[in-house]
Length: 430
Length: 139
Image (cartoon, rainbow over all chains, first blue to last red; front, side):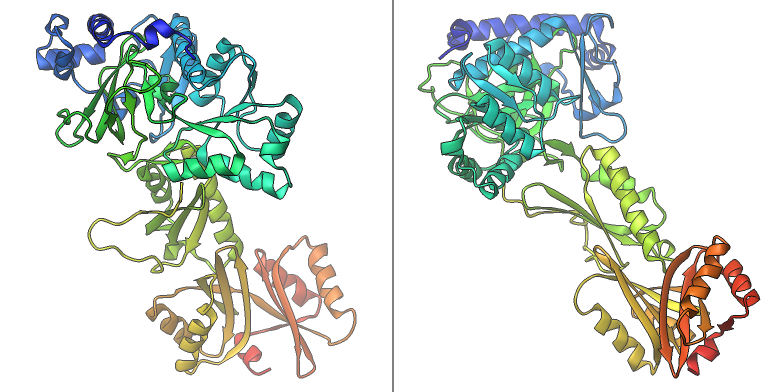
């Protein structure tokens, strides 16, 4: 089933011709309106006319996470400030977030890509779609919502958590499809079992779109088994509209990336050079049709590879393998991006805290920060230590968007690492 | 009067570890309380050799603090604790932690409060006896 058959099955030659035209237009626009790119082009001696082929994308500068953060709030805008109608921000930076602005057309195009993605898995306007991802500033909420509405589904903007209410909505409105985190899907399966609910018998739930954090093929099978549903892998990032960048079709064998909207490259993260076709590397994306904030060669830091060959579905947009890791030390917990440095900065701002800490990830999505108390932090009073522990958890929640458990331990109880400290212990089985 | 407070992880073996250090140093414990809050615990001891205890514990890498408390002696009969409590309450003094016991027919209360100086004053005015470190050790 196709939402936009012509675009989704466009022949490679025509697709690539359109990509080149869009790339040239995008480069022209940012050279005209975005000081950040103007400066980069100037230092490279680059002019828009230099982009003559798709291979010339490699002449363009990369855009990094730090660039977006440094140009918060509106430094990368290519349109007047009255034009954007939506703001989303992304986690994974210290202090200021990354701000992504969207015009009406950007919003509509983002919704188109989500609509394509959903219909590709078999969703129709008869479906009842429960969006169990965070709304607010996170794109997983509204961007997916608008796409599902476009298809004509009944969209339930439940957001995450409060499993009792999720279940009630599923039962009363006969939810058939849902957007959900892999960790929450596993948790919810356990919750249903506790309630004596057999999802196959008692619910109308048939499909889930799962993403926002990496998970293995084994976990996909586990979720499918536990809930009696089909799980489709979904890839997106706030910088590229959110969900709807790449998605699995009914064959569930890799995610089609919408190449008419994003120019993709897979590079060696150390050298910046493209890897041989089919090899693993870092995904780099360039927006081809974005109005408010076009982004050139964004370093996603996600490691993946292109899957070779055509897909039985007949789409000409190539498939990405599931994301297997990062080329930096970023973590994703409950769908939220976190850098260990963010945690370190909060901790070290407190003189009662020692230098040694460790971040433990376990279970499905439990985040614990164990940190040593400094001598200055102990005055014999249990309540003071408990209060400090609570205070740190609150501060970390404000910085990270996720509330970790904080364990204060005596100085000297954490292992001292030789050389670079191993700050993160990831015991999760997603 | 001072207690030795030790900050430890809330896991098996910690009490044994600390009491061994004190025993090896020949330190006698007259009173002890152990409380935990989640992943950590605080042990408080009244010992006969305060400075030695602190030195030994610190040497073995433990986090130690001195906690100032007061010891009050009340008559060993019904209503004695009530009298102390009412006195403190009347003066708006809040108890943080408190522990009581009877030894040799003498009723002793060990009181932690943020208003220590005021509490001492108020209880002495009421005619109650405050015990010093040495007097506690003689119980």
